[in-house]
Length: 84
Image 1 (cartoon, rainbow, N blue to C red):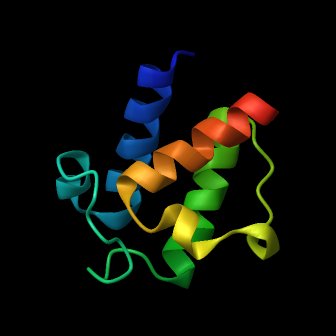
Image 2 (spheres, rainbow, N blue to C red):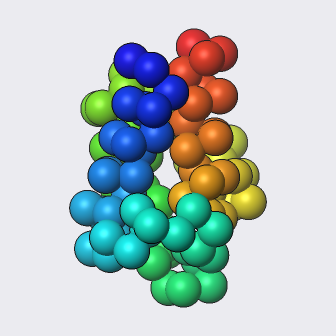
């Protein structure tokens, strides 16, 4: 899977979980401040990313800043995939 494929899939999942496809067009949208991410949405994202990418993401090791915007979220998942 290329970085573009990964980015597209991460953003698709984010849009599905948040119910807001605006996340696809604004890479710097503040997800928590906009009310798009809360603790339940984060857990749902973790499960969906684990299923989609074969990752193991511990909620305890999750840095809220790493998932604060769509751009940051894509970068975090890409980094996890590269390290994995």
